Image (cartoon, rainbow, N blue to C red; front, top):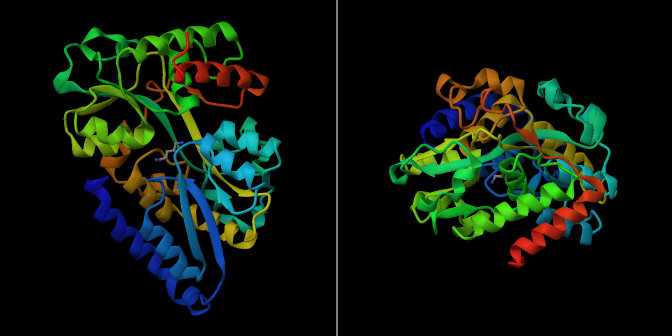
Length: 352
Ligand code: N2P
């Protein structure tokens, strides 16, 4: 986020400088760590600072969806990458497929900084495999300059004024999740009737669709190619920073909430370094820097204390309990995944 970028960078440099001297003395050739993460999620200067302090080279590549990450990790049988950062439901799948390995908590002392409310969740009891990095939601972004009436509901995507002006992510669980909320169902439903209704809703939205691409989403709102859409709140904030007519809305039916956590792949070659990387990312000042650059909400209690007033009061990034009243954390759906795949396939192939 541009307005707090410099301040955060300065704070990060000051706070991390204290640890630099001693650590960098034995930093030569400490090997590498191969990180596979969402794009726009960790600033380059954090990766560089980690290498400077530890001597560990970071080989970093990115993905745009849980499903894309999963496909690659699966085909490589958990080798190739040391670290991944899936959302709850996909972490649950990686665990059940044996694609991540148990963490050694003694090597992650900074886990004490993580909000206990976001630990020990059903998808990974005891955080045996996963350590929270960031959480956020998929809500509505709208250009208020081009909107007649206030937007309050997912069903507003169907308003005639938005014909040809709607943007959605090509992300199955996010987009099916919001459609399920729109029709009054849970984004984790196992019920086929709910999924049929969500599919019908999405088929109607398709009539108005202009952009269906997570990589083009933010830009399409900034340059006003689209007027309304569904967006991750961090991406939403970055768009708002560039176009003041944009605003982020928590619809009355709720938003789709996710929590992304680090996990070490089962075939990781650099397990020790992967633990060091996770521990580093859980430092309050490091997590603050990531948050300042890319938005979203932090599970790090130490970071919450470092946040300035403006950032803490930013509702796009820090929703109130009221904003999240009907919201649901997207989770693994077991055998019903087959139905999600079926209806998603029908939607993207334009079938009735
Ligand atoms: C930022 C990544 C957001 C992660 N581009 C959504 N789970």
